[in-house]
Structure formats: C-alpha cells, structure tokens
Image (cartoon, rainbow, N blue to C red):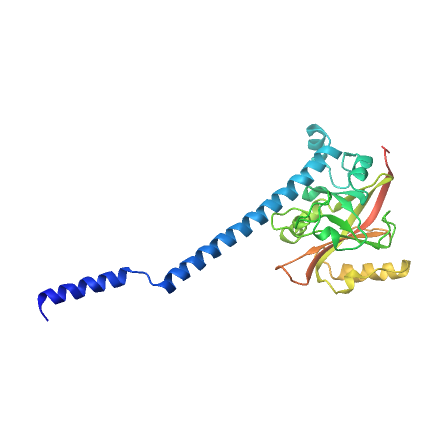
Length: 276
C-alpha cells in the first residue's frame, strides 16, 4: 500500500471514530429526557413540600397566639407537664374547615397542627387542612372516632414526611432515647377543653397488627394498654390511671412499607377552655 493510500485510510478511520451513529444519538436523547423528567418530578415534590409547610405555618400564625419569648424562656426551665401557653381561635378554624376537631401540640418536638376528621380515612391523606391537593395531607383522626376524644382509644394519623413536617418528627423519639423522658406529654386543644396526654409507649409495628384495635370496654382497654406497653421502646415510670388513650400513627421505613411508628398517650388531666 502506497503512503498516500495509508494516509487516506487513517484519515477515514479518524472521521469514522469521531462520527456518532444513530443508536448513540438516540441513547443520548433518551438519557437527556430521563434527566429532565427526574428533575421535573423532584421540582414538583419540593414545591409540594414547600406549599404544605407554608400553609400550616400560615395557619399557626393566623389562628394561634403563642406566649411571649420571655414566658417561653421561663417555661423551658420547668416545661414538662406544663400546659402550653397558647390561645387558639377555634371558631375561625372551624369556619375555615368544618372538619376541624382540635389543635395538636407536642412541645418537645416543636410540633403543632390542626387535627381534622373526614368521613373516611382516605381524603386527608392527599389533601391539606385547606383542602388543597398535596402529598403532605393533613393530621387527621380516625373517621369512626368520637369527635370529643372520649373513646378508649382514638387514632390520629399523619404522614412521615422526609422534610420532618407533619408526623415526620415522631421518629425523633427513636433516634434520641432521652427525648421523651425530658417531656413525655402532648396536648389537644379543643373549644371545650384542653387535654394533656402522657406518653406511655412507642414502637414500630405493622399496619395490620393488633395495635389498631379499638377496645370495647374498660377491661378491654386495660388489657390493650398492657399489651401495648410490653411492645414499647420507651419505659415510662409514671403511674397513670386507666383513662382514654390517644394513639399517634405514621408510616415508617421505605415508601410502601407496612411498617408503622406509633405513640400511645394516656389522658392525665384536662382543663375547661379558658381556665387558669
């Protein structure tokens, strides 16, 4: 082969290696579309998170009056068991959503949300308090529960959001073992009364377990509580009366998992709305 032919062959080889074929072009287009789709989905998820967080922050700002910074500092010194010093505009919240039942506060988690009750347990999985479609949903009590929390056990559900909103912060009890011991109370503010619940048990279970059982009588409720305390990751040393219980429930683990994280609280005291 002459030198001239060799040079032409090498040049042709370089052009061939530098030229992208149709399969490679199609692959790049598919990958590019995939990246764009994932980016679009991520943007949508973050936008939903932001919208949900903003809505509930706005609700707290409009309808709940917090204590002053000075009184909050004083409360920090002996906050365990102290009723949070807040004022809730129950009439305005009910006017905004007739399904409103209570304002939930868990001081040690800095968690507070309105609690609603729908006609089923599906609607508020995907709708906020203001009934906007959103994956954050709402904090809602079981549709078959008594609205005044007088049942032997009342279930309240919320999503385990990755950004820690809704019931996403409940898992902090597992991560920080001393957390519950420092302030083991949560509160439900209703128009009629404010209820204090002491946490007696929390653990991971599954959505079809006996945790989601509704006791039918006093002895049944006592037996239920004994079973739930045996499952607990938290050992409460408090002596509490057999009283109505509220169970907070959220998803746990990977999306679609049957695992649930639950927190049981027993009613320890209540005060009429407006009482000192």
